[in-house]
Length: 363
Image 1 (tube, rainbow, N blue to C red):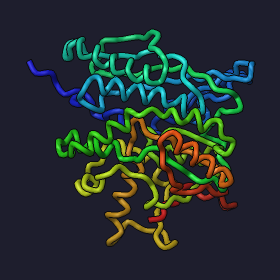
Image 2 (cartoon, rainbow, N blue to C red):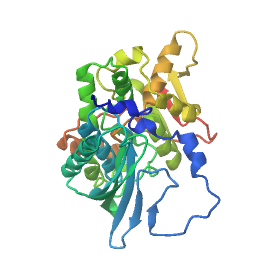
Image 3 (cartoon, rainbow, N blue to C red):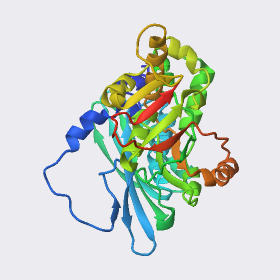
């Protein structure tokens, strides 16, 4: 009996299965007053990557969770990617992980328990690379496979990074190229080139541990990781939380090699379109300083660009806002950790007119 492909159980693979930002907002609305706890430094009001609690000794505790359905067919690799993705939230806060608790949902009537074991083994591998253990977990028998972690971490208060503390003038950097959702959609259609798939997998398996090093840099004013809401979605959270707007240069944004072939074949996941429907009204595309309308020859270019920038990323890179005077030190730290980065945009003060557009993308 042949084992089914894991991605057959994933209508929205990886972080692409996240609930859209607009719908999620409606779910999280509450009439209950939040508990007033001054030691809870970061809660869910800023859409940040993790919760942060002041330990009272100059350090803070980081708590986060993330899980999703399979994004690849190999069980071990799925588990590894899911774990790397979950641990990333700790690094995005400038911290270091301490331990993890596994979350497993498995359709035992359709997938053998031995396959689930391989998934958990992949998670253990990622945790080992991060220097932590899977210290426990919880599992249930459900209709579709899911795996992930709840991760605890720590950060000195002076190193804590948030997504709502950026400043006007900061330059924007991204530590991993985007396009994972497009590549995995091409994989589902069985048209992906092996080298393109393998590159995407290598990047998804790479820990964002450089975030702990960025945490020590005062010039890093804000940081978050790019996952299911795409580059635009997570940048919008940074802009809205910080009271800023952003100007991006499309040609300077890092994309995965070979992506153009799949863009031409319209290999965009449903999550990209849902993302755009949620926040596209806050984004403008321009060329030569003039706003582009989706008419004539520019229509295909803009349609492709917006789907690329709204593409859900799984285990994506860190989006970092850096003060200009600290860029040299930031780039040196990045290079010491194996990254060659360049800025692709900058943050600006909101004009007094309080526009609905928070991001301008220059084509």
